[in-house]
Image 1 (tube, helix red, strand yellow):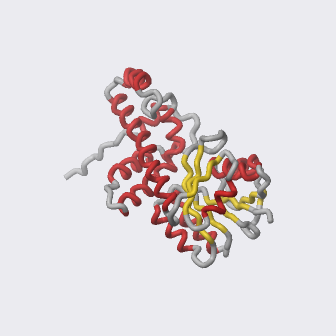
Image 2 (image 1 turned 90 degrees about the vertical axis):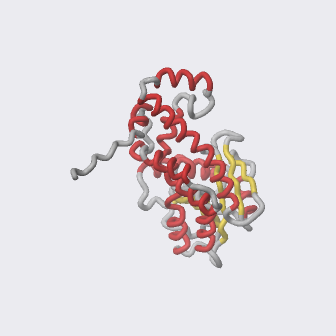
Image 3 (image 1 turned 30 degrees about the vertical axis):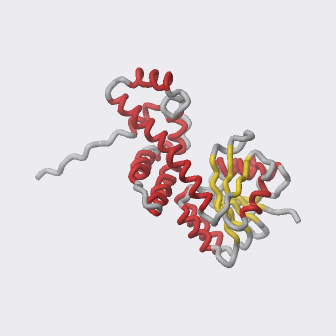
Length: 280
């Protein structure tokens, strides 16, 4: 029997992941209601079929901004969906378990963590999976450009791995932005860029265009930092580094998907405007 898959709110990652399934002959549906022209264009380019609801879908893939993950799961659970629900969002293990509870006795939840860019090249992107039915999702993606890896353990294990990696990976961009902003404030930014490019060229500090690329995704990373902070708190670790990075990425919110943004604009957005004291 052929499996039918539903992809919720196909952004850049969701569209690329779903396109892999279309390429291997798996019918993929999406729900256009309330979605904008950019989402529609991605879904059409990926070969998805429009649908009014998730009826007939055996598997649903949720790939959305982290802050929306639980609400999206709640809507799908309320619709009566009873198949396999893959939450592949950058959420805390606690939220992954909350989503599992939403579907308990109704549908099977698989916890997923995507590491890497939208999969368009072999070996670039991994999908870590955990939960009792992780093997069912693994079989969907075997042999595609997205490498599925099943982890032993319950729902939440894949999310923990994803966030542990992201806590390092994304923080390097926050540190690089702060360093460039400090150099710019003191007028040594040109020399600093030359130094960073010579000594740390393969890192966010010295790679050309690294900050501009990060800023386009900073709105999503802001929510991801909140999820990692929550995971750290639950693990008895200080969330301070993550909450600071969350605040920094929040300053780039206005540059969401802005392909024309310059490094100078991004560094200016990091400046903290001093508060003016009220007259006494």
